[in-house]
Image 1 (tube, each protein chain N blue to C red):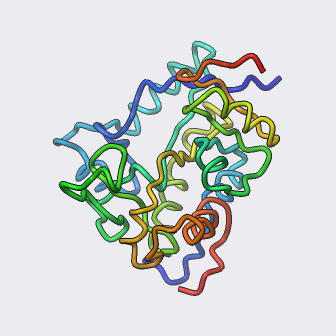
Image 2 (cartoon, rainbow over the protein chains, first blue to last red):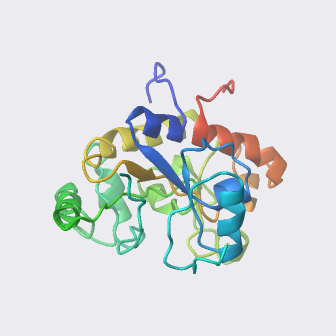
Image 3 (cartoon, chains in turn green, red):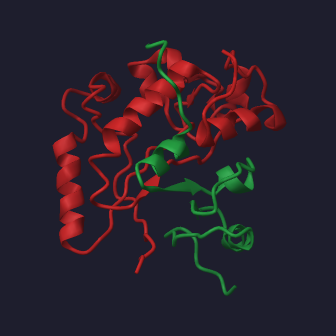
Length: 71
Length: 170
């Protein structure tokens, strides 16, 4: 491996490519990663977690395993 | 107008790896057999097929969990690879194995994957899924850089991996 290599965070690289990251819900709800508010948080475990992620200011894309709740 | 992605997950590259042309051993050693992977041409065809039908197809490279496939070509990057028989302690499904954290070789390797796949998938979608599901804390007790299964110890390392330039002195 090159010693001159400068490592960068995963999302930093995705944003640098003019793309928007999507993550699974655990990154926000379990690990409290300070995600950029542009990041989409995909919920797969429960409908309640959709409400939780959106209440924290994140956009949540539809996910086939979780029914969209009556918010 | 931005239409939010509506993901379906027709392809999961656990059984059949995705070819990364700049790191060919990833697919050739990670597959069950010769040629049993999605080639770069296959991926282009899938993205074009979707695009022609007005469907936005985006890629997920799941990390740092669900990455034991990398161990078949780069074992030094993976912690708790295929622990047996006690795999339920280290993964929701076998084989266990996650990318190491605070490891410059891991950071460089993942950067090489992103540098390969980001440019050739940007035409299909502005989104890129970086995974992050089912990260197992016990794995990091076996990762020499972390050496702990305590969530509050792991969290800053995980956050740096996902978000930022690593400020850690290696």
